[in-house]
Amino acid sequence: QVQLVEPGGGLVQPGGSLRLSCAAPESIFRNAAMVWYRQAPGKQRELVAIITSSGTTSDADSVKGRFFMSRDDAKNTVYLQMSGLKPEDTARYYCSTDPVSSWGQGTQVTVST
Image (tube, rainbow, N blue to C red; front, top):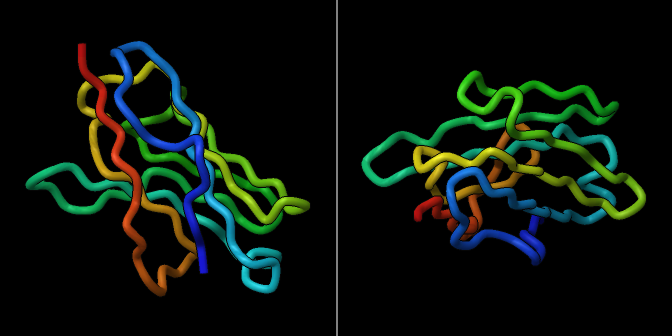
């Protein structure tokens, strides 16, 4: 199953950058689309980005131009490179294959002065 890999979330200043990583077994990862979701307190879980098995990406409007998803098939790993972070990006971030079969613990990203 998917598993978040360090370095992961944490406390970041506004305007800062952070990269999240997520790995999965090769048998699951190789032909799977992967997604990042996030959920802020009191809010619904939100799709942040998706990457297909061929590497095509799509991002939520709220993160376009700031977040970039990529995948490394040799490492069975996807990444979410976040820059220009804003306080409203504060949320717990989750990684999964698409469609989502289960949710892990996620990782907390807090953007604050």
